[in-house]
Image (cartoon, rainbow, N blue to C red; front, side, top):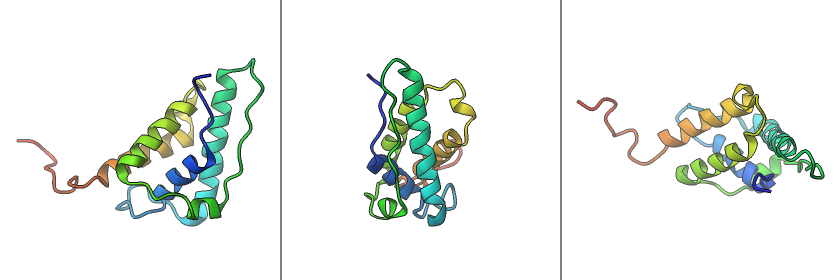
Length: 127
């Protein structure tokens, strides 16, 4: 199987990144974090089960607020890689680009890019 369910630590770290100071791009409140983690895990599981209908079904791990609070703090580059992995593992459903979890990860990608060192100092337009 090439598609897989990422670990709960992976999702907890991505969601923790979304709770950090992201210059108001995609920052979420801590009380929203557990719900987003649950939704991202469920969507990943749903994608893998859709991709491999003849395999025993995968199940979602429970991710708690404590898991998120104690998750590894990601740098913007680490967050971008982790988001890419989660997106790739969750994209098998035909409706993937229409669901809130996709939009959440797209917004978080933009926030991680904007958090890269030197981003604010770079020119907006190249003249």
